[in-house]
Figure 1: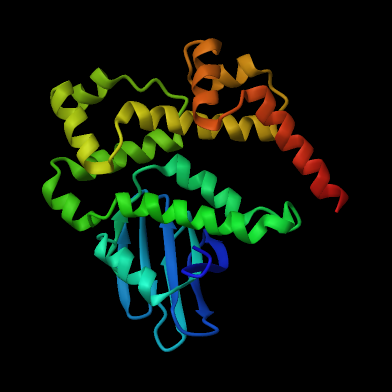
Figure 2: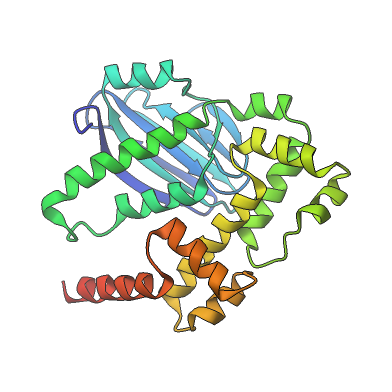
Length: 271
């Protein structure tokens, strides 16, 4: 994989403005991962990005000019991709200069952390870790190869579903009752499950859990709240259910996650 794809640079876009990236050779591409509804202008083309979408854009004449309107929440990567691997991505349905839906935001979030953690950590195997992480990232992105425009045309209530999904990730602690959602949309539960899955490749229930796990990680990293309090703040009904779901998604218990995170942060402070 390391010969097929390489991470050159990365960053975040949170405010209105414009910036430029320049490549240092051929085969460079710009990957934009968007968390909220945003408007971007890349070179001479404007994009209306829905929540949890992405696009990949080639460098043109050695440059990418990016302009955003208003406050946004997006991340970008500058990648070097071999011609053969690009052909493979395109044959898998990952079109360039088109928006696509991110099916699993929680997993993409974890991959981003892995790719952008301090370089001093695990330096001997850094390149290998990045290679595997990039490979996994593009496996997930290829899963969502249907363009957002196409989905919007084919999936009923698409705009309402994307707005709902954005609210879920902004307020994971709320009580997200499926029947209440269906009543608001005026549709049946089976039909709602069907179109939500068609739109995002994941169920609404799974999205709610994923958003709460993401919030739980942030609380474990930034507060000293007991696990029971974290569970309650994230909207879980019981501590037992929270701990079971957390271990299922993170691979370790909440207490172990906090301990490992704090230890890693202390090691970084010593460097």
